Each structure stands twice: as structure tokens, then as C-alpha cells.
Image 1 (cartoon, rainbow, N blue to C red):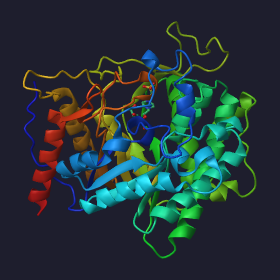
Image 2 (spheres, rainbow, N blue to C red):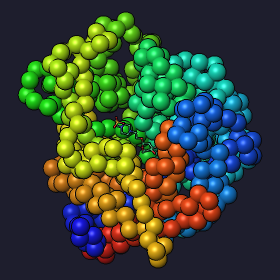
Image 3 (cartoon, rainbow, N blue to C red):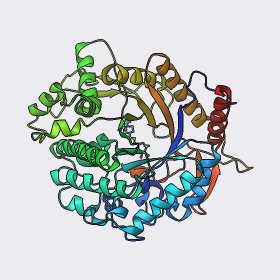
Length: 463
Ligand code: GBH
């Protein structure tokens, strides 16, 4: 059992940003209210077998009706910044045309509540809830979706941009493209690598066009613009050429395929060549690279784990059954979360130092956290020492990265609440606050109290 009494985190600047994060579909519920139309997740949840237990975000945490109470919770944690996402199908039902005043109204009230309690709102425009009508018209593999996204971004900024300074375009385009269009485990459940790669390009183009629209709309008002990527580390099992090659491929498809065009204005040549060998081409048109490389003020990093890779199968073959070079994840003997993900805090330090070296952008950890099988004690408390340790170790990893020169400016815990964990349904709990889904009662877990006390002590120490 670890010592979990909070100690101040040393070595952070006074303006280090502490936050918590959520996303619309995972918490809001109220999917058919005030003019909201279905998103690809509403549709996907109805596909038999797609989501554990046949669950959906229909009710979720009922945040749409309990929003002031939830913001009160955030305030009670002493947090500076609340990261949440806007539901595109609330603001622009169907993904086209004029804004829906009632949808916007919910987010205006949310921003009022947040700012009224002295908390900074941090908006994510897209956390996976594409309007179904746009999917029916081709989804992210279709170029038009990028244009529609920029239009939606402009509508959202028009309504909220006079008060909200922090805007993230996309959350984890890798997940949208790969899990949604290649692996088929997220909405819309398609399985075609070519479609997934067309989705990558149009997600990035949508980001770039939205970035331009947001800058135009902001004019002289302050704007801090970013994108959030899910990033990890790829470590070779051995020093063999095959294992290092597997890491090159994993890092290429997982990280550089996004970071290089965003920051350096070009896709990585090795990844483009690997795709060409599979007869897949990114549908790049003239002007796209420049649009995608629109200046970023901050890079959002969602970190859950690093991974070890091998370039050969268990029996030593360098080619898999599909005829492609092997990129195999090697399980390590490490503690794991309830998602079965290895717990790898020092790899967060490695990642942040590497991002600084190769991309040199200010970063914020826009998500970090873990699911564990929580228990509720007789006195009603939730003694989640494992989650507290996870958060503490990853915050320490951020401090270590800063000491090595990484410009990390903030840390947001994922998540404020237990919520709809996508294909896993409600069984996997990432919240620092427990949600009883029968009563919708919220209870601070021990990790939330630890986080609150750590932030408080750290602030006092710095003052
Ligand atoms: C985030 O996705 C999402 O932004 C958030 O909505 C979600 O609730 C949260 O994480 C928790 O899942 O181990 O083979 O799956 C993170 C998705 C998780 C995708 C780690 C990549 C590593 C590969 N990422 N995963 S694997």
C-alpha cells in the first residue's frame, strides 16, 4: 500500500494549469432534446454487439439536466480549467445549415456557470460525435466533411468566442480514423484502411480549415488554439533491426502521421511509402499541407500508456498472415488498469521530452487517468488508491519531463465523472467522481480528494 497523503508537487510554475476533462456524448444524455439530431455514436450504439451490454449515451450521466451541479463539483476541486466538448449535432443539427439556438444556449449557460465560478473553459469542438447525416454523405473519408467542420467551428466561435479563449479542434483524430474506419470498433464501425487514411487527411484538413476560421473569427480577441492527439511511446523489445523497424511503423502510423503535417507541413515519407505498398494514397490536394500546418498555440496530449513492439511473430516470422511486416505489441509484466492497459508513467516523461525535441510546441496533458474496479466502502467512500497512485505517478512524470526541458503547461485528469466509455459501455469507470447510474448521485472518490488537496498544497507552496 502506497502512502497517498498528498504532498505539494514541487517544480511547477505558479501558472501551471490544473484541470479535469469530459466529453459531450460520454456525459450529457438528453440525446433527442432541444433539436439535437443523431450522431454516429447514437447509430453505432444500436448495432447489435457494437457496445458492451448494448449500452448507449442516451442517458449517460444526465449532465444535460445536472450541469450546474456538475460545475459545482469542478469548482469544489479547486481546479483552474474545465475541458469539455461541444456536441456538433446540438449546435448544427444534421451537420449543415444555420446554428440551433437551443443547442447553443446549453453551452452558453455552461460557460456562464464555469466562468461564474472562476474556472476557465477549454472547449473541444469534436470529440467523436459526427452528425449522422454527414456520415451518410460519406463521413470523414469524404472531403466535404472537412469543409462542414470548419463551418461548424465558425458557428460555435461566433456564439462563444467573445468569452472563450481556449479552443481545441479535434480530440484524437487517430481514434476517429483508425478505430472508426479501419478497426470498426468505434462509430461508424467501418473496416477499410483506405477509408481510414482518407479520414486522416480530411480530419487534419478539417482541423486546419477550422483553425483558419477560428483565427479569423477571433480577430483581436485572445485565442489559444490547439489540437489533441492520443500519443504513446513505442519501445523495441530488443535492439534487432526488425524490432526497431516495428517501432518506426508504430510511431509512424500513431504519431508522426499527425504531428509531421501539423507541425512541419508534410506527411512522413516512410509512412506514405508503407501505405503506397498497400495501394493506399492520402488524397492531398494543392494547398492542403499549408492549411493543415496552420499555427498551433498548444499541443494537447492524451496519454494512457506506452507500448513495447516486436517486428516478428511469436514463432519468429517477419511477415504476418496478411503478408505485411509484423508490428506486434509485446505484453510486459507490469501492473495494469481495468482496461488491461499497462501502467507506464516514466514513458510519459519520455514522450514529452521527445515531443519537445521533434516538435517544440508548448504542450498540455489534456487527458490522463485510469479505469479501475472501484469498490464503495460501508461509509459510502470510494477508496481508489490505485487511481490516486496512477495520477500521482503521471504528474510526477510531467515534473520530470519539465526538468528535462519539456514545455508542459498543464495537466487535466480524465475524467471528472464515471461516464460512457465508448465500446466498453458503463462498466469501465475513469471518473475521479463516482456516478451511481441508478440514482445519478455523484460521490467524490478518494482520488478526487487527493487531487483537490494536491492542487491546494501546490498552490500554497508556490505562493
Ligand atoms: C481517450 O481515448 C478518449 O479521448 C476518451 O474519450 C476516453 O474515455 C478515454 O481515452 C479512455 O479510454 O491499448 O491497444 O487500446 C483514448 C484511446 C487508449 C487509444 C489507448 C489508444 C492504446 C492502444 N486510446 N490506446 S490499445
